[in-house]
Every structure is written in C-alpha cells, then in structure tokens.
Length: 132
Length: 134
View 1 (cartoon, rainbow over the protein chains, first blue to last red):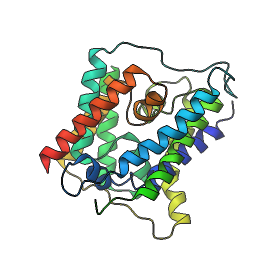
View 2: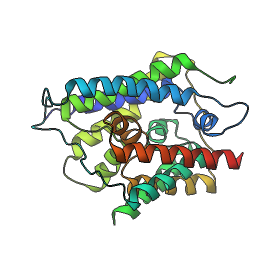
View 3: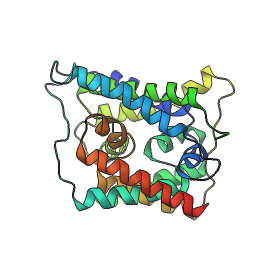
View 4: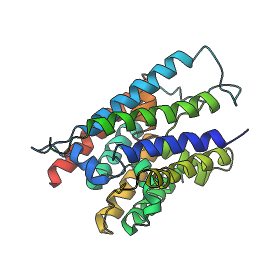
C-alpha cells in the first residue's frame, strides 16, 4: 500500500492549520476566551472544514470503496459512555489552559520551541497512561 | 473582534477538510490526529501510513514558510502549565478517543452522536477554563 497519500493528507491538513493561524495557541485562546476581543476565526475554520469534509464523505461513502483498502475503517461505537464524556471534558480543560490541541502542537515541532516540545512529551505521556 | 481573520480561516479550514478527505478516499480512515499519532507510537500494525501522515503534519509549516516568506507563529514558553496542559490533552483525548480533528471535523461530519457530544463538551470545557483564567 503506497503511503504517499497519507503524507499528502497530513501535509494538507497541517498547511491548513498553519495558514488559518490555528497553529498559534494565542489565536486559539482568542476564540476560547470569551471577552470583548473574542475572535470567531476558529469557528470559521471548523465550518469550512466541516463543509468540505461532510460533502465529500456523504458523496463518497456507500458508493465506492477506498482506493487502497478493502473497506472503510470507521468507528461504529454509539455509546455515550463515561470515558467519552470525562475524556472530552479533560481534553477541553488542557486545550483551554494553553491553546494547544494535538494537531497544532505536532505541526509546530519544527519551531524547536521548548514549550511546544514539552507539551508534546507530556501529551505522549498522557496517551501512554490511558493505553496501559 | 479586531483579531478576526475570516479569509485565512475559511481557506485554511477548507484545506483541513480536504486533507482529511484524502485519508478517507485513499485508505478509508478517519483523520484523527490524536488517534493516529498515539497508534503510530504504541501499535506496530499500520505504523507506516500513520508515520507518513504525522510526517506530513510536521512538514506543513516548513512548506508554508518556504512559500510565504513572512509566515510566523508564536509558541508557548516552557512552564508548568504547559506540562499540565499536555498531560490533560493526552489523557483526555486517550479516554475520549479523539480530538478536534477526529471528533470535531470527521465525526461531526459523519453525524456520530459520540463525536457531536465530545465536540460540544471539549468546546465548553475549553471556553470555561480559558475564560476563567484570563
């Protein structure tokens, strides 16, 4: 299976994150902080991403199979369970604390910023804790 | 709303959606960055495409700064808040099975009840913490 399209997918998402300034935690905090300077940019990023992805998803799904896979690997869990609810609340708290979610933090690795690298190290530790 | 950048937001957002769509069309996979990155680290099976995806994520801003000469962005200072935030984001996305990309974009587009619930909750929780701290 060629992996070049996975690279292109990641590249395109990351260029989108950077171009929309969502790579900048202060920009994200401008959206999450409700005050007189509230910045709705993140809402438009989400809206545009949703418009593009949902159009493609509903056009493509059920009519074709993936180019390099026998079938779609999509989650079909429907349970609104405790890990989902608590996990989302905990994630949101960390996001609101400094303005980083996983994508923008990983995208900013090449800045070499110690703060960014420390965030990623702590995030990986968090993933490890929930896996074992 | 003096910091509002609607044009960049719409163009960037469309690119995020398109990138996620590429992963779906070629591999039938959800473009959830927390899930892909953690599985690339802790699961052997399917590691190569996941690493290629993460390499793309890392390469994006390098490419953009080659194309747009005045491209720059701020990064956080090293502090205890950064460590705590990283841990919360890691644990939260691990328990909650996703972040802003997997739940917020892919899952909401698929009208997944889990993803819609998670997205509403992490948005509210993020706004609450950010607003109370500032």
